[in-house]
Length: 490
Image 1 (cartoon, rainbow, N blue to C red):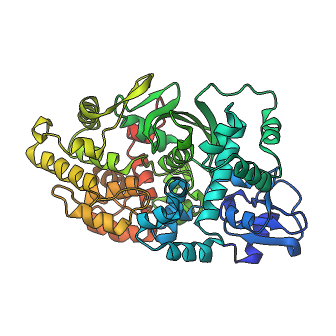
Image 2 (spheres, rainbow, N blue to C red):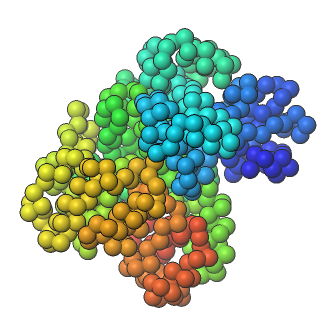
Image 3 (cartoon, rainbow, N blue to C red):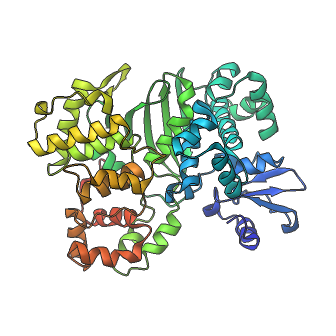
């Protein structure tokens, strides 16, 4: 979009928050860059330059606006909507892959050369992987400076900087303030967060209907790993450097996020996973506008606009849970998963509330005796095949996954049919166009709304909803009246 000058100017002049994260406005006369919704008086169009990423604006010599904080805007929805090389690279960078593994590691994860990755990112985003990772480090540093009482030296290394000097120089260059000045400016008399705990605000594009997000997560919560408590969803996190727990609660204009990490270097990855879990980088205006074109679906969208697709913090975990939930009730699936957690999960170093374990890895389950599972023999074989494929790397369900290849590999596993594969594609892979025409709840809602009743006919009708059929499923599930489509306690 940044290449459409007139459209960008109109968005800036109208202070349209829908375009925050889609592009960034650099002002040549002031040397700063802003989000489109910046509250200051818009600059003259002749002084505006538009960039596709904050990293590109920083690389061109612009510093972040202190009023609108463009580095804290919602991420571009493109990286959730697309499955091409650039989108997969951006999801990995957001997860901290460059900080952990460098650009060669990023390229290896994607199966391309370093030169190819750099060329494609530069062509589309105006910045290479190092510049994009640098912008990510600066944002992480700002979060730690403003929300924690950590010493600056600890923040520098936790944010991924290789030295304190680089940390200081980057913060000054990006924010036009020293780290100490940033902390003082943000303090405003607030008490620092408790040691080891971080309280963050995760932004999103409005509108957001939290009902099905938190309703689904609470209804399917695995004891020991997840729980709904005190008006928030809590769960454990397995991260690159250590363990973590998070609580997430909807608030007007943001999600309240409270993180407790055993290693602060995991902050970037933890935030990325929480945003992905709640689908916070979606563009609800675009989704709902498309779905409203169907007269039968439009009333559901109008009644509760902004529904998101609840996703996952770990693709392998969700795939295992999806198979455990085949042809059984939600309560039975939770019980089966809880038994796996108790027997094979990794205990938390410090339990919190009802959170006691991390969900077991595929490697931990690879040696599991299928006979120990209280389920039919065919499904035991499905679990065995699935964890073997995940543990060996034959099946990849991470943010770097190729959606088509993952679907094909899932289809080749015994006992995984179209419903399970599409559910995994929807929530583990994050495909916004995944569709479940055979799902009982979808078919009941379709019948109630006067939509075609057979899976084949419904699939043909749903072609008009593309590429947002996963969101259409959320609206259809909401029509069924299931508890998973309502906020817990409502």
